[in-house]
Length: 289
Image 1: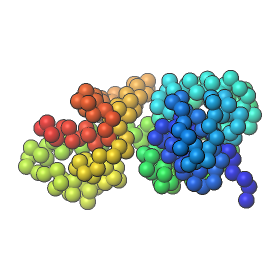
Image 2: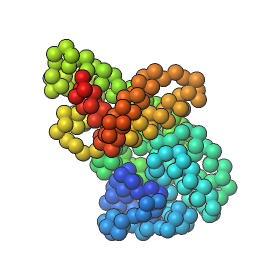
Image 3: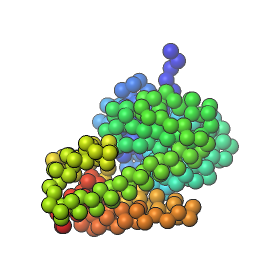
Image 4: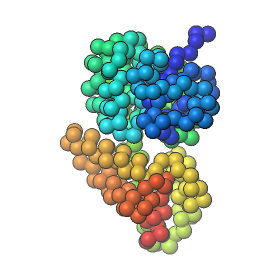
């Protein structure tokens, strides 16, 4: 069996940390960097070398993953990567960002000797840890095949969506549906409550109906308030919904459902629940109803 390529991870937030733990458990050598620093405990747990900056990481890694909060953070790291040579390096953008972002940097990456694909992750850290996350991958066939051993470790739902940029576009399509779903669920639960239904009865009914998506089933304990862990925070949902509306607007698509969801996330944020799981948006609406 060929040796596994060394994986560099830029960004050690919740998703980057989950990827590091999963890949380390399956024998991938790691080099990691994070703007806020990397704890020695995490580095020791994942047997990872800690790089001083993205350029140093790029020199030591074969495949470079970026897992960052937004377009600006990704752009900053890509700019840093372009300060060094990238011979034979594969840059893999896994964040939720604009489909146009990585395409703007692809020529510069090629000029430095590397290549790039976008491969945003669908699902939270718990799905990454269990290898059940989704991956939407845009890029050349050869780059997709090279990344496949890593993708297979992180995901059991791998979609090669087409050329560079289509992975990010597919993630936005998927998450726009989920964003609208949470807003409609909020409206439906409020309606049901006023009509005399209890939250437990409504959730029990929905989870055995066509409206009971896997996302609802996974988040039901958080909606009920039995589980206060954070799968994805309201603050992150607000950031993503803002991106979705912006991308749709760039294609002249009206987004009344996303706009309504944005208003609900904003209200929850203003209520002081920004760092809670997005289920807090539903709990807040029901408690105030």
